[in-house]
Image 1 (cartoon, rainbow, N blue to C red):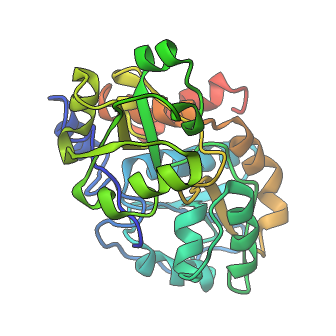
Image 2: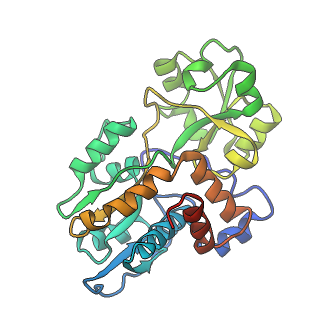
Image 3: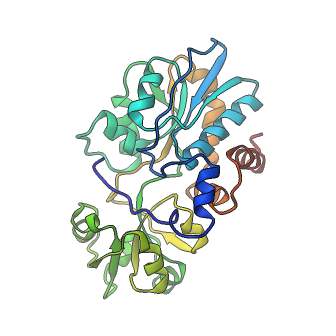
Length: 304
């Protein structure tokens, strides 16, 4: 992939390893994961839903499944398939008809040279890049992508909501994986797009710990990471598209798109960035099953 993520949260907290095992997760990356096999072609009246081998993605897929079942559809689950090379062919041939995806990552899969970065531009470009037979329903405001985070106390002290609000604050230290120092959305991009000056610290897996300790002021954290909630962080808005937007989006076969659109679009409308983080906390910290998490979320959002 053309970008990286700072892996945090899943190495912190004694509950994490057990939680990932419970969720059937080998990786927390929407681009990677273990292998899996697709079953035979489904019955014509059955909606087959897939998921990556990633606990957060499986939760969203389970929400889709239960929402459709609640609306009277027959659903078959083919979860924990793995990376895109494993499941995109099944989407293209109709073996799988619905899959929770991420706009920016999926766009890069089909169009590696894309220059789109903002949510709307990425979504539009993705619709054009998808192969015949596939389309996307409404994207969610929830994302799973690179983001810059500060502590809630630091955000309150400096009245921060957006990355641009960092401009002019002296002695800022940005932490993240070593590669971030030379990435276009690292210190160079901060200066060019937002006029923010930082020094860089290669904090890697200790990024959130260093942020909470006050050793850095800005942390490169994936936007759906559970530690955003558990460590009281604030994700700064990115109005200029410094990062490639990767909003949660349902990829669907055109043969069933119209039939299921109302149900799935209602899910997308209700799923927020904060809500996705909270769902991930329920998995990694509370060690709840995707089935129970999905059931309670649908009830709480009047979608059951």
